[in-house]
Image (cartoon, rainbow, N blue to C red; front, side, top):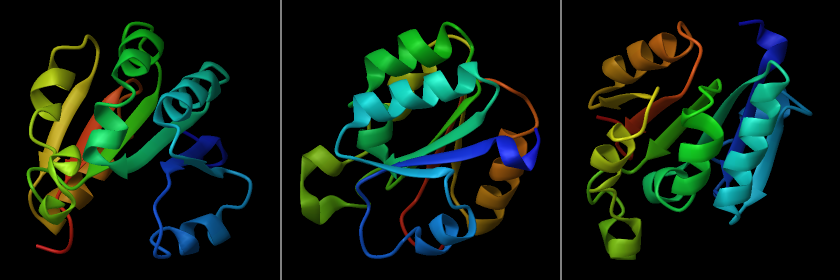
Length: 148
């Protein structure tokens, strides 16, 4: 993968979480807002042009809201889209069950051509990110919220 082919699409994440990345890679980072299905559809479209696309959001909003697009547009055609979900389990517990990432792993594992990794430590997350780009194709990385 060439560096210029890497794109980032992300859901409406506030608090300056991605400001440095957006600044360092102008033109290749897109805030898709609260349109998760469209975000994955755009990622799949970019992947058809040879781009490697990372889609990043809270676990349920990267894996469950756009499930049909992940299945039909990413997994079955084996496109190079990397899904990264943050907040596994009840990491966002105070926001209610809509933000609990408890079923996503089981559901995504049922899809064809996708690798799923849950990183439980910072060291595992670093290793998983490197591994994510070694093999083209769908990948789902699940991360905990905060440093562990």
